[in-house]
Length: 154
Image 1 (cartoon, rainbow, N blue to C red):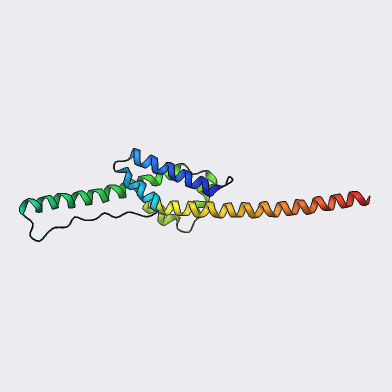
Image 2 (cartoon, rainbow, N blue to C red):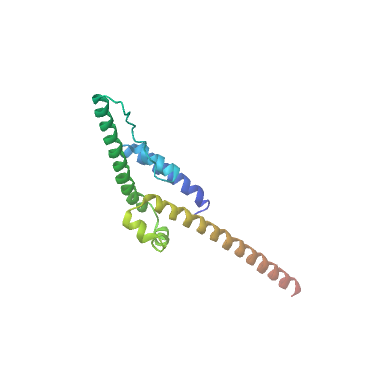
């Protein structure tokens, strides 16, 4: 992973949000899910007990539209799974496929679960890279010190 991988993740997530909001029908709903890192919920319309026949018909239309919007969001989020996987590099894909929740997430095409794995993996890889860099720096500094001491003695 490159330097500042968590920052790159956030930038990629912003671009995914933009892509989703401009590409998919009701893409703003996808953008909200990606931004909040959870599925959003929709408020069902309320029906007044004293509603007229016309108001009841309007309520049915609104309730039906809410259900359609929820179903569309679920389908769009499943489609985003493929988009997210397609932009992962081979090393990251390998890490994802070896994650213990991968099968479950893959079977459901769960975009938010996939993004959680990616975020966690990138963070772990960044920490590992920093740890190795620190070890190598100390090792090289120590070795360079021994070389200069040996050189002076000879």
